[in-house]
Each structure stands twice: as structure tokens, then as C-alpha cells.
Image: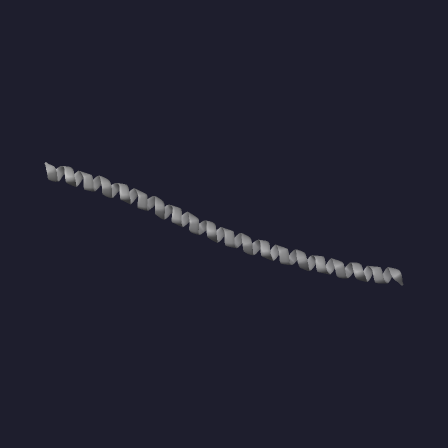
Length: 72
């Protein structure tokens, strides 16, 4: 009888640990996906900022050209 109770307790504990491990694995996987998404968003934001800076530079050059032409 004692062996049956001990076996039941070991089984219950094992299932409890397995459930925790599974949730921790899911959480770690979700964290990894979130980091990947954050890096992708950072890269996209950086490219957008570079594109906007290039557009601003082109607009500034165009404005200077227009001012020089209008001054003539």
C-alpha cells in the first residue's frame, strides 16, 4: 500500500513538472518570436528612417537649386 501511495505521488509530481516545463517551453518560444519581431521592426524602422533622410536631403538640394534659379 505504501508503494502504491508513493508511486501515485511520484506520478502526480512528474505530471506537475511536465506541465510546468511545457508552459516554460511555450513561454521561451514566444519570447524568441517576440525578439525576432522586435528585430524585424527595428530593421524596418531603420530603413524607413534612412529613406526619409535621403528624401529630406533630396528635397533640400532641390530647394537650393530652386532658390538659385529664382535668384537669377
